Length: 248
Length: 248
Image (cartoon, rainbow over all chains, first blue to last red; front, side, top):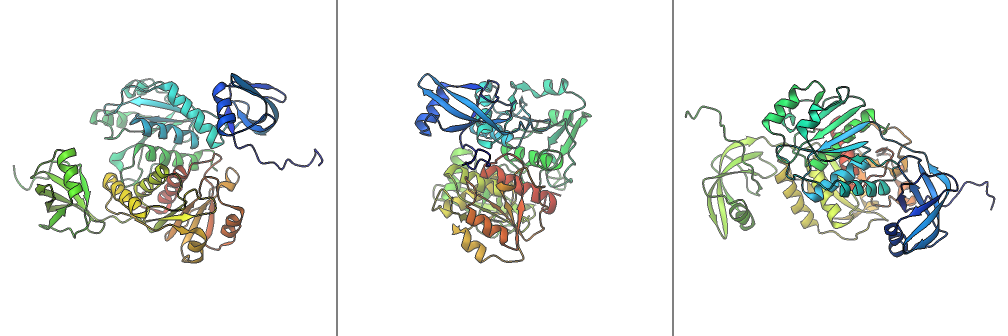
């Protein structure tokens, strides 16, 4: 078969996030955990191909050249997708129960949030998060969603401080349960933008008054029913992406 | 305090789905499981109020009159919300792993789907569902979302048969992964309408050809990343609700 025919083998199913720069002929280290997954879970062997991305250089086909217990190696053999960075949209949310927090991070990655900021509100259920665990979860979601960008997960910060330090050119789109069913859906502002999802139990009266008074805050209605935080995050991100984002 | 002042106590936090008709002064049976929840979990006592709905008569304030082990009773004391039926929008999805299937049902209820139809596709992971369990899950989601409607969950049916019996005036909006990132988002059709979400692994080539040829099918793009089925369901329902549904 001619080398000039278009490649007919499908894009590799296994996608790995790596730290190193990617480029033709580059040799890329594969971590111990990744080797375990490739060898023991996926039963892959040297010579087979994975997809590699690092959040900067797009997606590359990586042919496995070594799979040893202590780590392996893959060689870059052609770019399979360009780097696609999501629009400049942040997602702010109040961490909830562990499983739901994981879902929100996963969904923010799938939906193309550029950055994820856990905020502590008066009614936030949890007072600490494990940022490194959530970041690893974002990496895993990027591997599975076919994306080439991994949103950074910020440290948990009090909402009041985040608002005090807010960049004024970035509209903050507040998913306000108090609006449910009464007002029309607000028209989302273009990037730079951010979405704020409240905790179970909503925002406190103090927080609501503060948010309502801030010049960069716009209110958003997500319909007449009460949405869980992870549902609200997907719904708000959908409205924004369909209007201003990379879905068009 | 005058009886003519507006009620200042908040709407009851506990919402119960019941089967009986609701109306002023009606005595409503509270099931054994509901009594257990009210008494042992929520520590409620006779004289306290819950919210009652049955999917037909709106939401009513129900004052608990009896809480016995074998069952209890509440008396209707004023309607607190009118019946709100969602628009005539169905959600069709291919059941996946149990936890994700539960999530899809939960999210369909929150998002205001009128009916939920599990369909079996060529790549559907599970061959059977427990319809009664999913229906109970829909009831629970309605109790928590503040809604007064409970979507019916249909029995699992093969996609081919569902399509063969399709009512032609109902547009079926097909979330097609093959469109990702290439075409614009399709403009959703008004009710009656339906959304079809595929299984992990997407639809088979045969199914894709069949869907593409049907006159009532429209394709929908949900952006350049691959969404999990539950994320795709929320995103598609959002686009429809914001355009034609009860969010406006």
